[in-house]
Length: 85
Image (cartoon, rainbow, N blue to C red):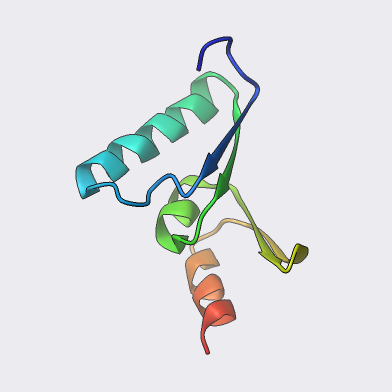
């Protein structure tokens, strides 16, 4: 966070964290977005955490955008439907 970056990129930030650390990380991310006006790009397979803290979800398949969603109460269900077999 040194230098007040405008963009932070996180790759699987919730992987291997215990539940209390996941909660603290979500709170930190929300604070950065709201108070420092930072754009945070998260690459993650964890749908529930990502939907909870994001205002926009972009789904890629083989490098191509297949969904671009603004988060809403229905977003998690829509993503579950998209990925279900």
